[in-house]
Image 1 (cartoon, rainbow, N blue to C red):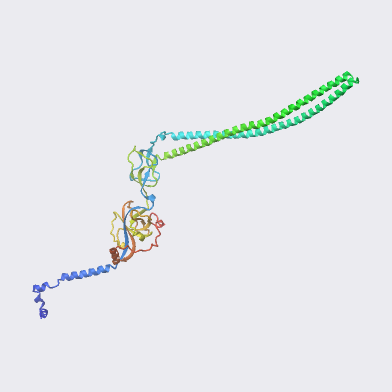
Image 2 (image 1 turned 90 degrees about the horizontal axis):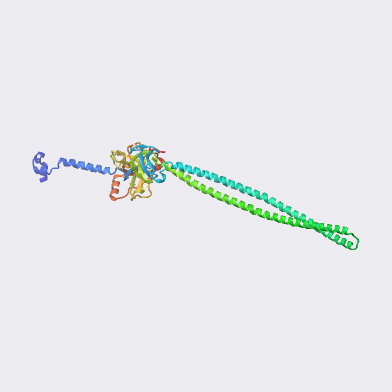
Length: 456
């Protein structure tokens, strides 16, 4: 009955009661409910929007080629700084003098040391030539002695042959004179018997005795000549043997002198080689008094200030930043994310000091970021993380800013798979890694790109 009573009441009637006004739903509440329901529905719909998974990493700007990175210029020799030829921040070309050094080692104090060493080297080379001429003369002398030995041997052999023939001739004469003496002796004996029988006169007997004495004298003379020729033959044979020994002694002495001369030549060659080496080293050392730039670049910082300071061998004196380096971003990725990274993977980069508006899941609507691709992935971890190098993406229309400097900070996102937002939230809440995607086929690595980011 009460409900019926309330329903029949006029609106103007129950609005004047406070109790009825308190139980009435406010208009603002209905509006807030509508907005909340709409926002909730919009939020639910938003979770079905695509989201690009990414791997976030912090790093620095570096160069792709090691030769393009900042380097320190070292002094090859120890010396004293005499003069600086450059200022910090100055651009230098390859071969330009950075600083001039003076000598501090007492072995090189003489300013004419190189000239004097050259003179010593020239004198030693002259001595070598003279010694080589002496060696040639000794070789000629040995050849002459060998030729003279051959001629003398032939002469002595001929003399021995002549002695043999003379001995043979004298022996024949001796035999003939001996036979003639025997005949004369027999004739004298017969003549003496006839004289005793009175058949021959004393004159004839004396004549026969005279002839016997002549035959005996001839026999003795022939015998002496035979003995003399035999002695001459023996002397010729002895002379032949002594001739060989004499020339062998002369040739051996000449060969010994030649060996000593050759040894001196080799020793001189060794000294000349040492002096040549010392001369070349000193000549090269003189070029190290000027510390030069190894390549085009800018002088970043002088590591040794002032003049008059001494520096050691191999000590760094200047830091040089090469000109026109091929820039690359050095990022460090966690081990759990490194299997998802491959060469050619696209990366979005945010450089320190560059205005940006970043939506990591929607790279297309981000502002102030720049594109890159993975060029290098280290095979060994660095401090627990793996290093990757990112170079400019040649497909990006907007190049990297020209104001970038090596060493500045960079924040990067490696772009992976596209998934719904609700799935990405679920993955983040459960701590799951991003979805694995295969290696990109459109890029092959950093070796395809030049310094300006265009394809080779």
